[in-house]
Image (cartoon, rainbow, N blue to C red; front, side):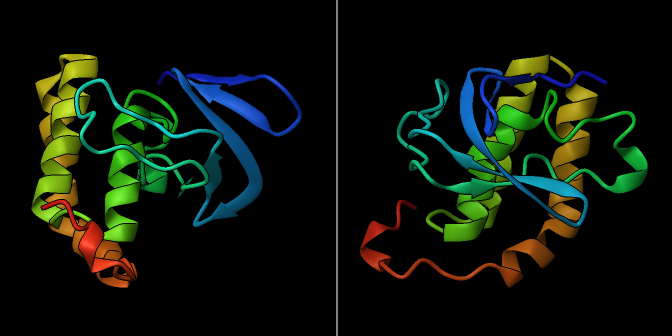
Length: 142
């Protein structure tokens, strides 16, 4: 398990190249972070994630967190994915496919990328259903 967390100040952390504010709160055992600045992913620059977006990293089940860290190799993919799920600016299917592509690009691990994608397709509907729709339909990207 690799954890890419680097603490820079009391509440500011950098994971990979993503600067975050640690909200010092956990939900379902996952830490909450807020983006310190807009995140534009190298692979998907057409989907910028706004500053102050709250994310929790990869929603890895508790029994797997010793093997797969929520702030490890799935983290970069989880940033736009969390944003897509909370705003619904693109379809769930497309959000999950982008997640898979980023994980595959970052790790080269087909088993991890497709395993995580299959888990999202099987159980992600709960998070998708519980998220509120974006209040500005004119911003929809899909």
